[in-house]
Image (cartoon, rainbow, N blue to C red; front, side):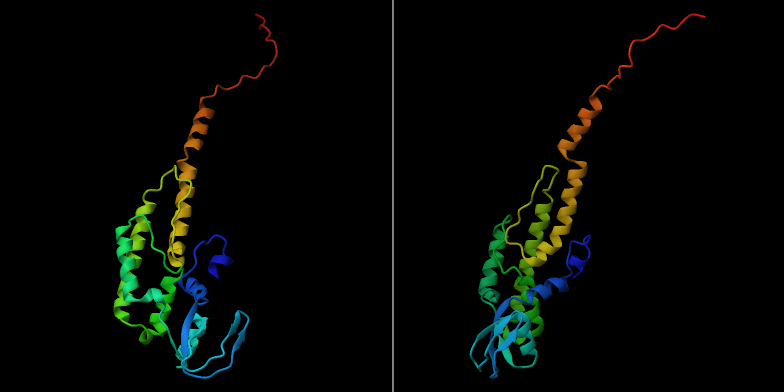
Length: 211
């Protein structure tokens, strides 16, 4: 991954964040009978028609592409739940509502590969986009309050993609403040400049002889 291979790059690409999100567990309803799948990350199955089971998102998408299952929409991706979250986000300008850490990536993958399994897909997508816009506006507003006296910033309930976007900017901002506007550094520089230059004792002085 780019963020790991390059120590100077502290941000992951959206595709890399999405790759991590594919390990999230979702429910599927198979339409086939299949033995359990034994993988490095765990055992999944056996699979029976119309019997719900839990699998990683990447496996759910792979089975969905082959027409072997339907993917159950997560509980938080309903119109009622998202409407409540959006209203709460708008009413609380300094708080972020709890959502899955990878809610942006999960919803994108489901819209890309399992749109027909999502009830009211158009409205659900619209609500998620509105929630994203409100949350990003909160982040921007919060960053405007950062000053040279800021030692840390606490943003609770941010998602992976939101953290990925905000982190590099926030780190560079705080580093710039500490470098140029730190009161301690300024005071130390002032104290150093106001100190009298010490005079070195070179021993007793001799009077110059007149010629």
